[in-house]
Image (cartoon, rainbow over all chains, first blue to last red; front, side, top):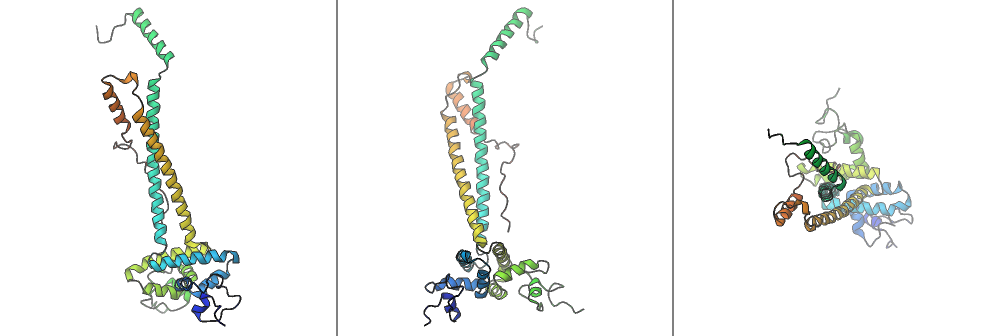
Length: 148
Length: 165
C-alpha cells in the first residue's frame, strides 16, 4: 500500500519510510506546498537543512521556507527581498514623519510657555521697577537724553 | 601557465567552489566574482547550483544581477537563521513599523490638542494694542508658522538608517 506517502515522497516517486524526515511537514493532501519548496530549494537541500536543526524547530522552518519559496515564484527577480526593502522605506518615512510632528509639538509648547510667561509677569519685580523709576525721576530731574 | 578561460583572470567563485573549468560565457561568472567566495557558498548551500541555473535561465539578462543579489541576501539570512530566514527580518520590520505608526498616531493626537489649545485660548489683556479681533488673528497666525519655513532653519528630517541590501 503506497497511499500513505507524504507529498515529498509522492513527488519523488519513492517509498515513504516510517521515519521520513519530510512526512510531518508535507502532508499528501497539500502537494503544492512541497512543489513550491522543491522548485526553489530542491529536495536534498531541504532535507539537509531539516536534519541540521532540532526537531521542534522543523515545522516553523518548513513554514518559512514555503513562504519564501512562494514569494520567489511570484517574483523571480526579487522574491521576498522586495518586501523587506519596502518595509525599510516605510520605517524611514514613518520615522521622518514622527520627527516632524515632535518638532511641531515642541514648537507649540514653546509658544505656550512664552505666552504664559508674558501673562503672569513677576509682580514683585515689576513693582520694584516702578518704585525705582519714580525715585530716579523725582530726585534726579532726569531728562531724556535727546533734550538739552 | 595556461591562460584563463573565464572573462576574469581567474575562475569565478562558482566554478572555483564547484572545482570545474570556468568556461567563456559561464552563467555565474558575471555575478559571482572570485573575490566574494562566501556569496556563492551561501547560495549553493541554500538553493543549490542547478536551481540557481534554472532560475537565472528563466530571466532576461538584465534581470539576473538583481536576482542573484536577492538570492544571495536570502541565502545569507537563511544561513544566519536557519529556522526563520528572511521571514524573521520581515516580522521584525513589520512590528517596528506598527510600533512607530502607533507612536505617530499618538503624536498627531497631541499635536491636535496643542493646535486646539492655541485656537481656543483667550487673548491676554496686556496684548491688545489694537482691536481685540486683530490681536487674536495676529497671534493665531504667528503660532502656526512652521519653524522650518524660514530658509535659515535646520533640517529636522533625521530619517532612519538601514535599508541597504
